[in-house]
Length: 221
Image 1 (spheres, helix red, strand yellow):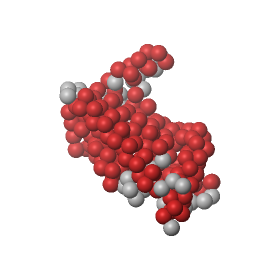
Image 2: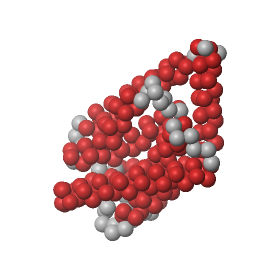
Image 3: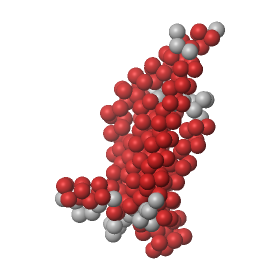
Image 4: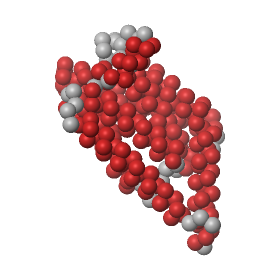
């Protein structure tokens, strides 16, 4: 039988790896970012997520898949913060490779903003809120992802109001008047693709997690 402590050990290991990667990336990106205020605003979600993940590691340890996606999303934010999204070298490489008119890294960031929160929301809806119907589950996951995307657009608006032209690097619109709509569309696309490609894998991890926890409780009793 597997003791539930095994789950906590795995969670602690995963969080240590994520923390180490994020700390190294934050240090590297923060040494000489293109614009310090923009860097701070871009990496702020990482600085918020890290203590939240640590604080909930015992009561609500997440699946390895979700932890991995969160780690990758954090790196996307940190990398974008170092250069500002409109100047990320990877984006220029993709722009030249694919013949885009603008640096597409901002689009990639908003795609991840839908893709990763979708799996986080899916896990919470299944484990915490016990949503059973798959249709309503998928609807709620998409709704949560779009709500997060919309709230982020509000943050960008507030930054523009507060900072004026100083917020241009944070906004990353690159002159596109439809940038907000594109951002939300990319988040919607990311969330939808996450459900289509990772739901079965996620279900298997959730089943294994539930089995491990149940076996551990039976062992304790």
